Length: 76
Image (cartoon, rainbow, N blue to C red; front, side):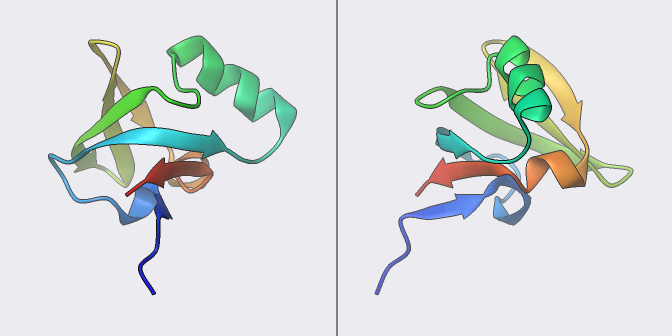
């Protein structure tokens, strides 16, 4: 059976996905919402730098900590 979702920490560099959902605490969800990271939005993993995940959301780049990256669920 093929999986239809994965978390950001499992993505490969250069891949673009749609955000399926954001899990976790409300405070963290609101923080990601301010970055433009919400259901249906495109997100691209640019690189992994010092353990952080550098992503592109709405033409902006952000470094996201691994504990936050693992609550961002992507469509595959």
